[in-house]
Image 1 (spheres, rainbow, N blue to C red):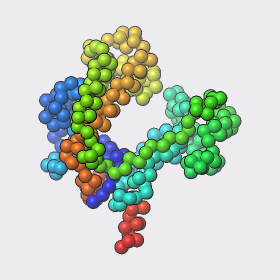
Image 2: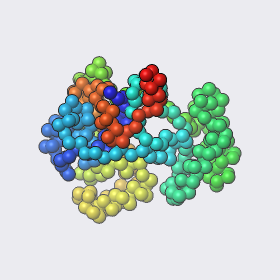
Image 3: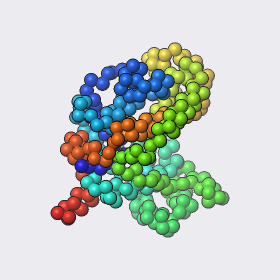
Image 4: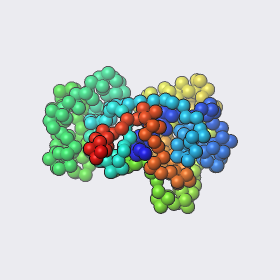
Length: 330
């Protein structure tokens, strides 16, 4: 059997299709097939609901009873957010002690002066991303050197402001007198590990309390029908202000915001709408995580729930570190 990271599991969810899933998931389908709670249904849009249904099916012991439609999981997409962003095929692992499976995420952010360019000139932004990645390689700015204190946030900011920013006509990064408030180049995420949740890790009573708390916070956030309608588009929280507003205007013209008037969007303003969408997306993300853990606990989901054949059918490839280790042992 194979081991996969949470990252790979999420890729599967995004790209697997379940035959006969309704084109519109209504409240009755949600209560019967996802989770029996009327109020929780309203947090999610249709894409969220479809994703939750696929998560529950993959977590279950009876996924063979569903017709999973073959659709290749694509290679990792470069989001142009990090310096050493991984690309290539999504992997599965033969060995649960594989270093790659348990290494976590470590990378440098592409700084804000470059990211701001994307709002006005996507082609220039793409070129700048390539240039700064080459700049990091040429100067040997590696994660290992950062972790060994050979380079620091302060040094990277100083060199960026002195050399890179002037060369490409970019704003400089603000330098703080306090080390604590320096721009943080480095991000580390703990190992996601294999997609597994033991019964000992899940507290059902806490789950119920947390979900009730989430529902109360959302009730306080969505103070009317208009906000309820706009909340379905919280994915726009990641868009630049103008693009976000223009998409909402378009949705309103297409009658996809219910009774929300254009004047409401204009009068509320982009900053307040953006803040609302960010808060709602955070609440929804937590609700999705809680439900995903609940599904795995309910079905006693184990590491060996996926076979190599199943994963390869969906375009996941074996990790070469695992493959070579097994080959050597043979």
